[in-house]
Length: 477
Ligand SMILES: *Cc1c(COP(=O)(O)O)cnc(C)c1O
Image (cartoon, rainbow, N blue to C red; front, side, top):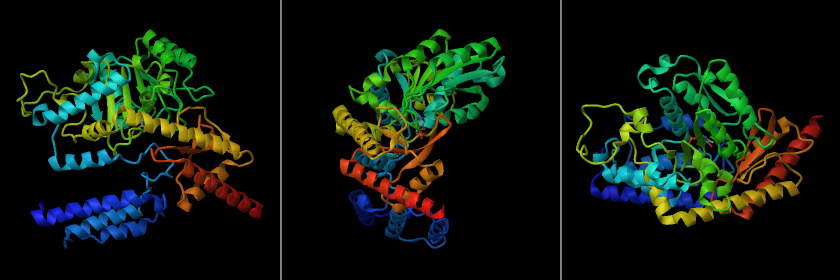
């Protein structure tokens, strides 16, 4: 039963394709968010007992029904969430092919096609961000977390070559790296994973636009140098998760350069701006980065698990990750190619690049340019409509993520509004805290199919929730 005979197998593929098609064509009719009922989910799953195997058809129905009923539908045009896209059709098809062919891309020679597709993605994306073509290198990763972790390891390796063999004991003092106080939390986590500890990260304060204060960065570097510490990297953010803020990349890069520090740009989501000529200037200076994080599973809308790490240093991944082995295949020993396992922290690795490559192959640069421009326009429309309805926009960005508050509405009431919106099933939004102080509502255009009617629907849903929360407050006063 590990493999079905041909006839039932074909029936299974049809069933899977039908379930996928049904989901994609009717997701808009579903409540955006599920009721969170732990017990009913657990008992549903416990109903499948491995002592008594079920039919393939029943297994597919079990999975598709469970996913339909118990997830936040990120492919819903009224999901205004955390950069989780509706997946591209070609991405879904690519992931299916990858599962079936099961390429192993630890060694180049086991799947030269897959390895070269990924190499090409790295080259083209590196070129898009403005890296000099002859020096581009990089690797596909599981996501932004792994790409940022890779950046931290690469910068440590570059600054302290003995780190590779001796670890942190090779360092004569405390290593320090810098990121804004609005940076992604993958950095403190990566610091832990690298063994340098979370206190190696200095959170640089932000300005009124939530961008790293360049002056404060420089002062902090000097203070740390004076104290005998070992600054080694600056991690700028292009598109913060909270509010889409983009650090002043050029100014930050100059400071990093002046002090000989690795300059990384976390453009996991905001890197999408590079696809649209009128948005590209927002990323001015990213071409000077030593490395970049870009998540194809965010603004390129490919299915989950598609991060990209890019660098302008051809040898750094090799120096960071290469561990020679006797057993890995040597079939490609005479060729001028790279075995991926020598360039990443993964070993056996899924062919992540295909869903990016096929999505780009079919949409083209232009298709992405149009989609990202459209989402940006929907963000501008939502910002405008919220403002005309009396909300105050709390963040300044051209990217389609909007943080907003309301005069006279308390923080608890904002939380209650978000909760009501989510439990209505009409939309998914969230709250966050800007600059560590101000609670805001947050709505991000993550779906390339979001239209003005969805914007209007959100404005209505918010108004209903606001009235309900305020009248409850009045009743209990
Ligand atoms: C999403 C995000 C990350 C983390 O990426 P994952 O793909 O979730 O691992 C890192 N940095 C920024 C700015 C992000 O938006």
